[in-house]
Length: 242
Image 1 (cartoon, rainbow, N blue to C red):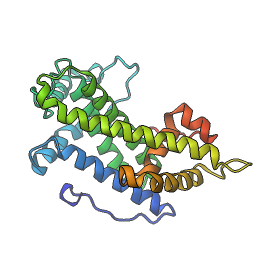
Image 2: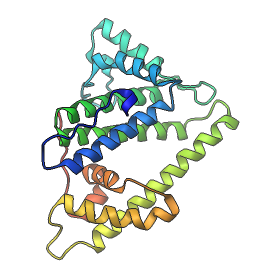
Image 3: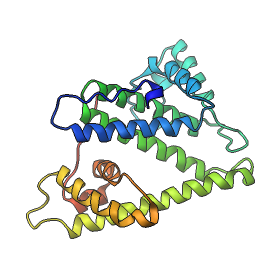
Image 4: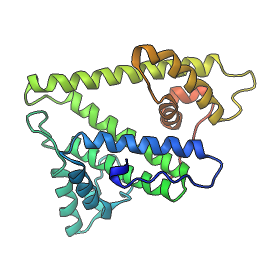
């Protein structure tokens, strides 16, 4: 997003299209976050507060927290970041900070993806973008499962989350079918070939019912960590970690 200081300067590398796709996903992430803040200024200020903690530390177990790896001052500052993430308590009581922690992690991964892409590290940027989607899914899953503080105010957003989940499931099912049905006898030439071929077919097939969907980005994510999709494709994409 231009108002977030994002500059689309294409790197002098062969993967220009993949770079542009990643840049589009990063901009989409900023637009998603913008919906939670009153203004671009408040979002920018929040990300500036988070930036000293980026890249976020890799956690040893699912039960670990970032605070476990920080000194006392850092722990207090990080908890304050979680507590100050915008969330209307009438929509969701997040007493255990589960939803807001997921959103803070999403912010951190988005900042790291942006930095990687600016440095010309496209594969690393995509790996962090898959983490963005993971944390978004965690937040939405918790949101839809938690008891709303006020049902009448919750219904609208729950409906939106359910609709999005159904759309993603339809896309995933179609991707699995085409990865199996369209796979050449000798297998796909490359993951990129499979993603482009299947992604374009599925995007066109679901467009009438679900609108424009970035199927290639979703398929890249699923081929990174979804065993059923990986089996259908006959290969696994290994992400680039820190």
